Amino acid sequence: MPRYYRRHPLFVAVVLIIGFVAFLGRDAQRSPSAPVTGSDLDRYDGQTFTVVHVADGDTVDVDAPDGNETKTRIRLWGVDTPETDKSPTGRMFYGDEASDFTRSALLGRRVRLLLVADDTRDKYNRLLAYIVPVDTGRLFNEILVEAGYAYADPRFKHPHRERFLSLESNARAARVGLWQSVTPDQMPNWRRRNAAK
Image 1 (cartoon, rainbow, N blue to C red):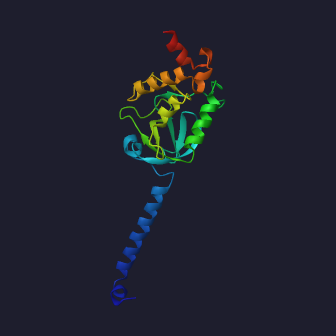
Image 2 (image 1 turned 135 degrees about the vertical axis):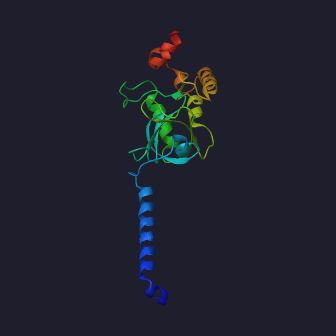
Image 3 (image 1 turned 90 degrees about the horizontal axis):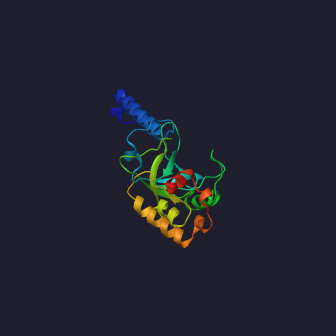
């Protein structure tokens, strides 16, 4: 050991303590139980994550902590896919197909999230987002509607609302996906109520 450090053991002790504290701080940042800070826009908007679970056609989880949770639940903005048998309302026509499509397209893939500044959470505290798979560069929300796996949901205003409605109209005219044979009584309740107005 050089002579300087032998004469100044306090210096060595301080360096070791600082290094140890920095090491613990780095591990705390990685810990799922560490508090998550910053707004949703700061933490998620424009950021890339991996889809680790698909709940159904319009709801997925990504590998980012959210509060006390180890992952973040995402509800896709502006679309509504039919429910599966996991839903309290029960299985709906084309629900399994929509869920399978989302699973095959997103599970294990890297996606970029895009948020709407004034509206980042729904009433269930799920993050509202457009999802862009990094390998396609297209809004997956849009693909769901275009391919007939989802209804365009006009109940809430968002930047792509008119675009999604136009894509749904095209999908309906082309009879793709659920539009091949869906009947009014097989549609979601909100959709039937809107049609009755």
